[in-house]
Image: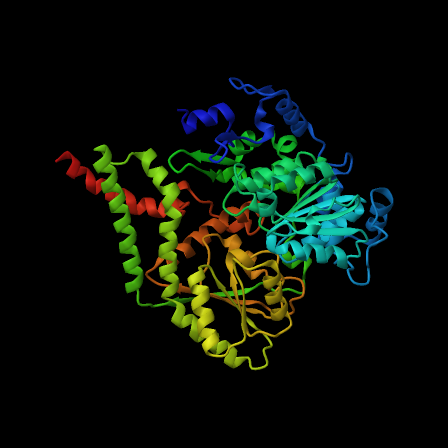
Length: 588
């Protein structure tokens, strides 16, 4: 059996195992290594040509590279530059509805930069990337426009095109049973919007879109393409490889959440991975270190400023929110530390330890030896997230009483409902417990959580924006991207996330275009529980993203490998002492 180390040597650092298809997956650019086909592998002629095209693709408009970089960094351009661009490069389409959708000043240089080759539109959340992308489609006079986005945002994308004045057919494919309209031929000219999970699950739809030959392909929240081996990523790339490189646009406010390795699928999609970096293997070798023990990549500290410079020079449009939206102020955030009764949390912790001991004991009984590194890794891959989720839920339950009191205080202090409160949660059990309490107290509330239809979620958003509810309970995973929730300016995080970018995305549902007040967030931290660890990890992970994104460069403290504590490493920390404790028993 080929080891992970041998596999990386053979296929490159970006190789991943697709468990479902039982094949190794690599970016098409890594078919070649240092200008030659990778040895010891049989490459089809199709793969060779696809790799050659990806490595030599023209990703920018020749002669205008400086203008592309400059436009990707500035908050506005003057009228003379606009006139030059529209007369020399591309002009806004006649159908654009200037009365209802006049672009903000920063959206002009953003669209210009993207059209010139910086097709990763990575402005901070809340500054109007959707409108910038629609401007790009108009500037390019695109005929067949494909939008792939998180499922809950598909209807919103259709509305955005309609409000911009788009005159042709707009088709939105939604999850669920096939509708009669879904079986109709795609329009000769128009917009097709598809949820990314739907694209991954319907092979026939993917084939239909490839045959449709879109000339403009935008992927919203493209950071969701986390792994080359995921069905979502493979489905998007399958379609992308049939779209001209100049027509592929990615949108995300958080291109990096944990480390530079997350950029590989994104850059493969936009077409920059080969021409700018020489392929995925070269990219990972240059900016990351692979740790065999953790089966993961960590960033190379010294290389991150160089990566930021290359992204700015060749790839993205990224401006700080407070430069382009000067009317906004930075969110005011605070943590409320709670001295809670941790007896229930300790019981959850004991249950996790008991399960770990049971597994080690069963393994020794079957094999006569303690689990080795490979067995431990296999166990952690299957069970770590579940064990940590059990601890996270136990942490959250300790905070419910305080959360309920704070929500009641807010409702009582805001009788005119001038700032309805958003309550952020993660677990379904916490959602339901809070909803039950609000119901009993007669508080007008709605929820945007997992398991809802797009229509239900949109109705909740509309009611919040119209001031019809006092409290909106939101799931960080279901409502954390793409939605506009600017009616209120206050939020309470009953639960949070490991990753600061995900929390920032949630905050930016309020702190975005349309907000006129300072956004105030409070986070409940249960002392003596997993909450404290999550807060420390947020601070450390934020440093990585900061140096690559170009934010707070002077304050960066890049993580070492031992700092990259994930759910897997937390459970490993509990498991290894158990394995060590069992070894003397075997020797006896």
